[in-house]
Length: 73
Image (cartoon, rainbow, N blue to C red; front, side):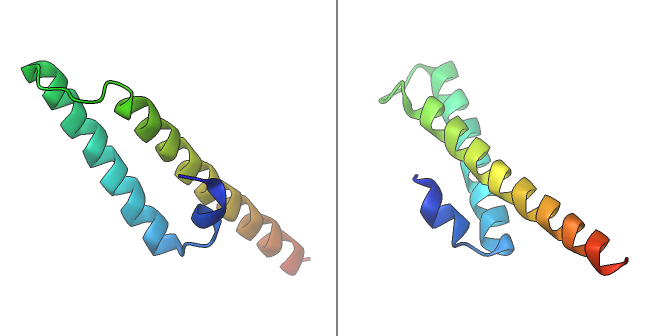
């Protein structure tokens, strides 16, 4: 997942994508335990997507905090 489409998502969509990716990572771990893994690189990609989503969410949170701080002066 490229970063540009992530930046265009709303906060709710980001939250839902994060939940979906975390579920996918959990499911992959269960597949690893049962030995039925097709793509061993999948968790790496999912972890990176999770990191991208969390980064965008944190950037928005920081920007909102800065805007609130400037507005209160």
